[in-house]
Amino acid sequence: MSSHKKIILPLPKEQITIKVRQRREKELLLEQMKRTPIIQIACEKIGVSRASYYRWRQADREFCKAADAALQEGVLLVNDMAESQLLSAMRDGNLGAVTYWLKHHHPSYKTKVEMNAFIEHRNAPLTPEQKAMVKRALKLGGLSDE
Image 1 (cartoon, rainbow, N blue to C red):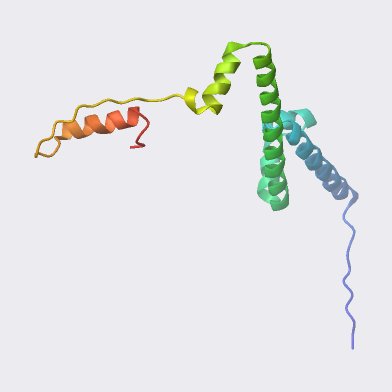
Image 2 (tube, rainbow, N blue to C red; image 1 turned 90 degrees about the vertical axis):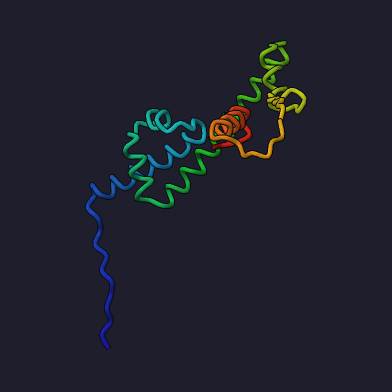
């Protein structure tokens, strides 16, 4: 019975160095993206091109997942910072900040659309012009996507 041993030849030193450098760059980029969730800026800060980032995403499924998670973490951090600044501005009496907060967090201050209409009942169907006018009014009122 012959035994076959798998022979693993070592990679040339330059390939090992490239792989090690690339792994380190990916790690640094992921950490930077957690603090700065803008790809261009994160890449510039660690000295990696955007093209490399997108190439890594395409070639490395694990890096792609990690990059998405890092970006999400970064967005949440920026959201927290923005809310903190907004609250500080409100404490300082900034009326614009107060208005913004109320419009986005209090139902009484949300932007509203009010539509009044007079409907005359006829037994005839709407004309094409009337249909177009109704569609346009609904779209302008944010009540239709058509």
